[in-house]
Amino acid sequence: MDELKKYQKLVSIAHESLKEAYAPYSDFKVGAAVIMEDGKIYGGCNVENASFGASNCAERTAIFKGVSEGNRKIEAIAIVGSNGEKTFPCGICRQVINEFSKDAKIILTNSNKEIEVFTLEELLPHGFSKQDFLEE
Ligand code: THU
Image 1: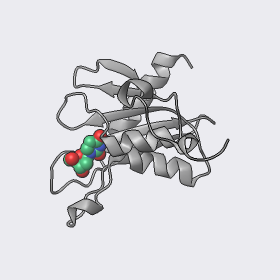
Image 2: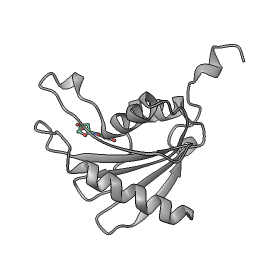
Image 3: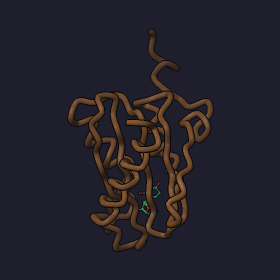
Image 4: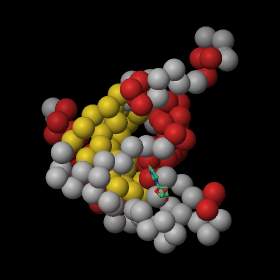
């Protein structure tokens, strides 16, 4: 599959996942879809909580699904927000992406279906990772 088709598929799964978002407090729904190194795709949505700090972003829901199935390397992740604008991953999600990839592609889209691709390095320069404190 060429890169653009792959990204469009991820965007479409992220849109599907957005429909499952549980966001009664912010009313801002987010969907994400991550493709891992073995080609498996996992969708995820934000899951909020009455104790706000217990909420989870869509990106982390998708990533944790993949990691809990044994995958350890993110190839790309698409993110879709319910406001129709491109939704950038929050800082915590950038850090979680960084844990499982140094060269992940981050795909954003808007209601015009324009796609913009960023590298993790662009969104999280000088990220902190296990190489910074564990011996190789
Ligand atoms: N949210 C995400 O799911 N991903 C992002 O990249 C940005 C924020 C969620 C968290 C919360 O449920 C709602 O959007 C408003 O912050």
